[in-house]
Image (tube, rainbow, N blue to C red):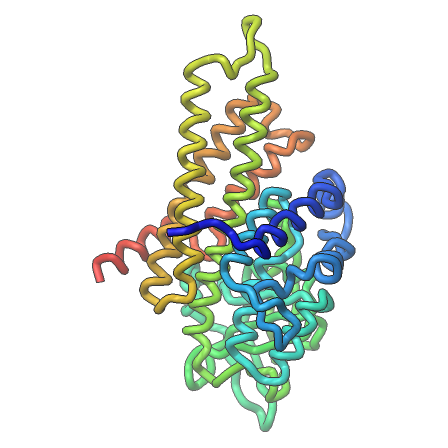
Length: 372
C-alpha cells in the first residue's frame, strides 16, 4: 500500500510547518494562555486567511478545499508538533463534522464562518455523570410553542470560553438531539478555567435556555450516530496531534542527551539511555501506523471505524505516557520546568490520553468490538 502524500498534500504540510516555525512562538503562546485571553486570535485568522486550513477537510460549497481525513491528519500533526493551543480539532474537525452532517441553513452559514475564521464552535456533550459515555444525556430540551427550552448542565466543554457558538446535546422525546447556541444567549451560565495542558474549557449550566426552532440541528432525536462519528473523528485527530508532539519530544530528548555531559562524556553515549531512546522511537513508529489505520478507516462503516479508532487511541495513550515520562526522566529535574518546552509537551501528551475517551475506554471498546 502506498502511504506517500500527493503533491498538494506535501505543499499543505510544508506550508503549515514553515508558517508555524516562523510565526508561532512557544513563549508567546504560553504567555497568552497564562496571562492573556487564552489564545492568539491573529494566529487563528492567519490559519484561515493565509493558509486556508480551517476548511481543509470541508467541501467546496462552504468554502473548503474538499480534502478529507489525510489532510486533517497532516494539519493536526503539524499543530501538535508546534504545541498549538488554538482549537483546530474542536472547531474545524469535531464541530464542523457535526454541522456538515446536520445540514440546513444555520449549519451551512456557521460552516462558512468557520472556514473564514469568523466563528469558533465548541461541543458541549459531556456531563458529570456520563464519564466517557456521551450517550448518557440528562440535559433536557422541551418544546414551548415554536421554541425549545433547555435545562441541564455540561462539563469540560473544551474551547467554550473563547467560542462564538456552542453545540449542545440534549434529550428530547425522540432521543438525543443537537442544538446550536450562540454564546451570550440568556439562560446559559459559563464557568471557564484553564486545563492542565493550557487550553481553555468551561462547565455550563443551562436554566430555561430558550432557543428558536431552527437551533435544532438535523432531525429531532437522531443526533447520536453523528455524535459517535464526530467523537471518532476527534479522537483520530488528537492521535495525529499527539504524534506531532511525540516527534518533537523525542527529537529534543535525543539532542539533549548529545549535549548533557556526565563523567566527562555525553549521557547519550551510555548504552542504557540509548536503549531507552530506541524504545521511545519504537513507540512513536507504532503510533504513526495506528494513526494511519484510524484515518484511512474514518469513512468506513461504523464498526470498522470504531475498531480502528479505538486501536489508535489505545496505542497513542500508551505511547504518549511512555515517551512523555521517559523524556522528562532523561532531562532530569529541569524536564518539568516552565522554561523548558518538554514540560509543556508532557502536559499535553498526558491530556491527550483522556480526550474523546480515555485509554481504558478505548481498550474496552476495542475488545467488545473484536468479540462481536
